[in-house]
Length: 554
Image (cartoon, rainbow, N blue to C red; front, side):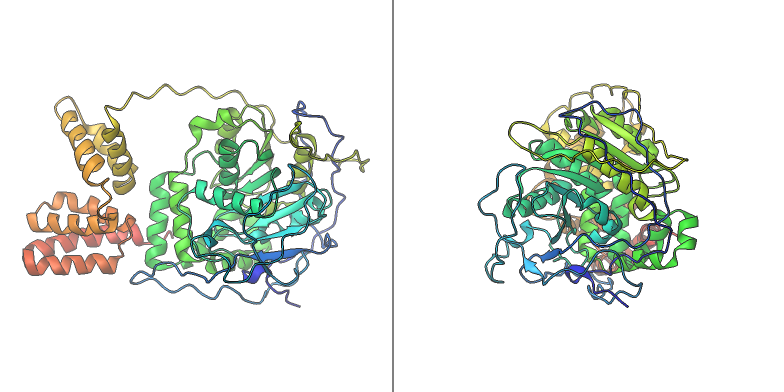
């Protein structure tokens, strides 16, 4: 019998029938910043059987009207955000009636028991400017327990953590949230990882939650790491799941945004299973694969593109040493998106970090190996929860557990320190530094790297001039947005016949938000005023670039 979606969003997590097993009980508390054991034991499982739910839960939705992302020519409209669950029941019970997120109010004591949310505000209480400051969320677990915040991956909803809730909510008050435009959440796109973190803190502030543990997957992990850097007094302990200090390259994520802007989310939905799951799991669990595809399909395209841009700009490699809370870095051994190499970079850079390598799992390890992930999180947050005089966070009592399975999973725990990167040469001035940043954002890292690599003593001064004045001054001015500047640049290149730069700026125009249909209109307009031969040559160049940039992965 279908279970209704929570928060008006994507379907809940489908259950896979698997043998049950006894959970690994957490050890006795170790005290503040206690030394970590050399190994963390957990038994990998493909799935867990139905378990009783943790009790009443409440789902909350951000008030205010849903604002659709800016439609672009040629972009399919997003599908409906709510649909019945075709995949059967899941372990998480249906919530009570949805409530609006209360606005920031009096804040509770740090780490103390949290009471129920404030009464819901009327729908018109928040101004449109204030509404995007909060996130859609739900609670599970005892109201007087310490709060553990759990963040989702890009393209997923809070349901990706359904199988961890029965165990984790026995010990913590679990706070799950949806990214903007995901799971039926209002489509207020966020421009950066830091902005997503600020919205999360605003939501928690409104609920009186001051101090919390945090676990997040992929972009959810990036949000947690950013909070640990910018608001260290709020984060008690941290778990980074399938995360990275830098996600691929900026070019990769900006190209993903171009593909979604041109083709909609269907290409991302179709390829999600191969990015998220191992081939064996995908073949054995078709219901879960279909659930994953539907999660992506019901995401708002504009919010997905904005999240890609946020990941393109995210880079904390130089700041890892400032993360001062106990950190578990958990990664699937077969993760091809943010794999063991990225995990080891995190462990090498974060002073108090340990690595857990989960065999038989890819990017969505909490879905693919739920038992192992649940046990690792229980172990980490039970032994590494930071305490101090300003935040009295309860710790779990010692629980006698059944013996561990005869074939324990032993994750890696000791990683050599990372080699310090050499100091970068100082930029000639602020305009050059700003120009380099904008040039890379518009033209892409690959293009700028190629230009810099071919520069020599004869051309380097010219490249510096272009970077400082063209990109650091003109392209950096506030008078026009980048879409408009791309339109002008394409027109000028066609008119002047300088087609050698047209390919790079066609690629830049796509990244700056122009669709292929809009680029075609620019070239048609140029043909009228610049001549048919020049426009014809421009069409040939632009056509090739558009085909390369907008063709979805096979």
